[in-house]
Length: 217
Image (cartoon, rainbow, N blue to C red; front, side, top):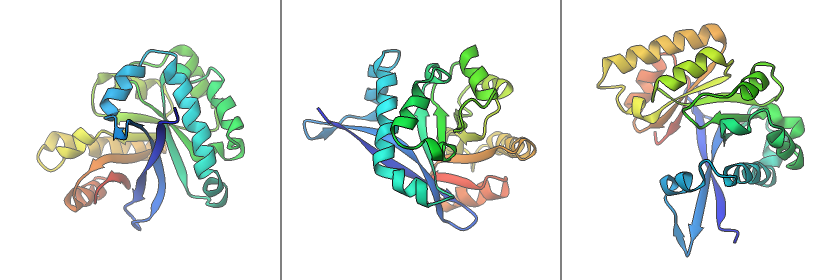
């Protein structure tokens, strides 16, 4: 019923405080009320709808952000992508259909599940069958993400908002982020901190080597 729409959460560079991209967020307005995001995901998880909605989001990004992606060299858009869709061809087809094939390198597929990728997805990512960037989302929430990092060549690691919320009170979190930053620097991987709520967090993240973030700051 055309009840879905997209919002874009900016990604800010700490260096110059400029917006360098955004993450696409699915929203559902039903009977003039917004359905909470935590109710949407369980309803569509592990159903064919998850693929259809992902493809719809890509097409919608093409309609809403296509001109910007074609005109602004440094702007990137992140789209959540369930691992089971990676390497199957549907995402590549949706990108082409959306008119974004020539700027696919400006799209980042954010792996949303905390489970492991299957071999088809791993092969597609590591062979760079897709020109999109690959992001490991919600890093810091469980061992599965550590296993993912050991198996895939991720372009971006997104540090979970729970870890960011503890960064000023938990020394272990700061050490974890510092170590992650050092490893990312060697591997050429970008780090993005999610759920930032204060300038104090920003300053600490900068000292720890993180250069980009999302949130309210």
